[in-house]
Length: 487
Ligand code: AMP
View 1 (tube, protein in one colour):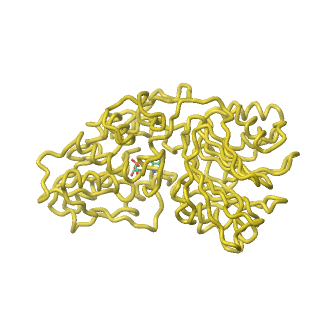
View 2 (cartoon, helix red, strand yellow; view 1 turned 90 degrees about the vertical axis):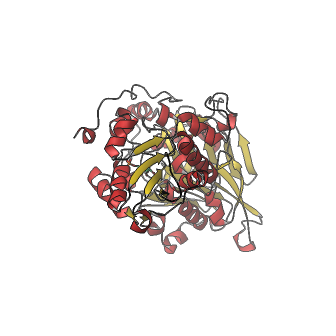
View 3 (tube, rainbow, N blue to C red; view 1 turned 120 degrees about the vertical axis):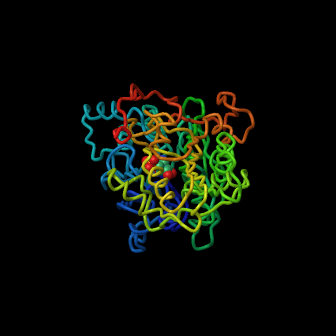
């Protein structure tokens, strides 16, 4: 998964981009990069690790100009190396261009083979580099013409930012898998470029605007392209329309809870998910005297609040999170990940001892986290542990930009709910149904039918249903059973 941010028309574009990336840090912690233009040439800096660690004020001072784009990354295609860090910036016969991508291209491998056969030399393992080569080969006269020509060859999920020396182009794929929104920043005299009163900003999530004091104008429509240049903002729809399929997992886990995605408050959606999972899977005879609701921080907190309010049960911080470790999920090896859960979360005996615990998390991927947590809660004196998950079983990998592992690693790909409960050693386990998830996300009362949903509320839920809106070949067959369960 990744985050993108861009600014057009601010004298300190790279500083603003740095702040924007900071607010999007949850979307990727492997690397960060910024490219800026002073109107003549692009300057670029990419670093491994967090935004704050990667960029000093001296670095930012080198990235001069009023146009900039930035990227935070964790890998979904290509390994965790500096050469794969974005934005990619290149010079070609038409000038200079930089690109930042959130998503995953589903046809990048055949395209890459084709381009290599024609002499292209790739420098990274990233799917995004295909776009750079297609841009460079395009016969288009302007950046936007080149973008349209290049992207006609490409399939998959993309929210993209491009820039050349003078303009910025933002593009969301026709199905709208990944979010992207436009904001406006009112300028003070010293920040203005050539007397302009506003600068424009584009970001994966609206939370990036809050930090820099910009106002959300709107989310980009699926398939929409914006050109930001001296004429202001020009919108067009260069590609054939497709059914909208924005990623439901953004609502469940990925997006920051204080933002808006698909026109909805992520926080309110997550509270509804918590309410709904308790309706579907109540804990019998739970009373406020002996039962407490405990979130897995941070991802389970809004759903746990929704569940606790709805069930009229006390909400307790029974797990305390260390804020000095990142997301354990992205640790590369399974052994480190095991250790990582303990590093990140510790049980709070005062809230747990002698209680029946309803522990709430947003998802189970491999099962590592939940299994450790159930053990920790029991070790700290919990009488019973009931696990509630505010999404359906994650049984299918994502090919559109979320870093879910292969099917062989997904516990729900090869085990039913009762088998998973036994593995977790929980007293009960309840997942939200797909119909419940879609209802809660849509804020609607009627169960189920995504086709019937309002167009802006239609989602991709392939990770839960295996229903892939863009073909992904034969990757859907379960092949392995998790060894860890059999042992
Ligand atoms: P696991 O231990 O593999 O079952 O991981 C489950 C935890 O990972 C849950 O607490 C989720 O909040 C979190 N999670 C789920 N999906 C992702 C993802 N794509 N990237 C990072 N963390 C995730």
